[in-house]
Length: 389
Image (cartoon, rainbow, N blue to C red):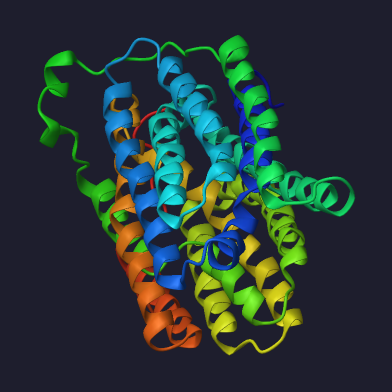
């Protein structure tokens, strides 16, 4: 049964994603058609935004291991994002969107590693994959409701994107209130203060370091999902339908995250993660070869399965490998590695698209995914024992 922090943090992610996904699927069109930005600048915005978030996840994760009450970081992060995100409505230049996305991702960076560590400490190791799978399912449920709500509002009541973006602040406020009222710290072994003074001591060792290096390679080919929306538009999906294809994508993520996360508890994390990375490579090749709007819809469904296979299992594997007193730092490095790769991934992808074409950019992403999957199969053992419960 899902209870306590796992349930509440799942609801928090639900409302947060309702808010963010009322905006995000329409952001590429808003930038390129309303504000006049090109694919390369979209890559800059998304690369800077996601790298900022991920690098701050490293800092907040290390800091969380020193704190008695990690919920303060969680509250601060959700509050900053909920306040800044709707300000996209006031943007009249592309650089303003860059600043707003930066602030939004600062909030995400502050909250994510402490939240993931609290989730790991809130359940038994035998249910860790299910707990992360549930959390990701709730996150994706919000990402289903958000675009559908945006579509309904645009079709019946709201006349422009800016008004819609302002309305996105309402579910974000609900998320902040839930954190404030119901999320509670979990007693755990704290990291000795003397060990936190030296940053280098937080660098993961052994199998955990190997896993993160391979993940970095995969991330270098994992550009922003905004490019998939841009590609869908190229393939003939109309702007008004972009929130619907985004909702379908998240519906698959929502439906698959919990059962596939729980599957990793039974059959092992390695096989589930490998299946996800192979699915990613195949999907990107599909986007390279696609020629119709129907292809785009099918590929977004396949891409949702990639997330269902990997999000819960990747986090559960990390928690398995990290000692309890270093779990916040481990999640910080996990997200930090993603951040190190996120900026060049989106920049390179955007430049390849602009200088060559979309097909070449997607082939590039698929190739790196294939390399990372091969290294993961070779260097990560089939059965990885938990470092601690």
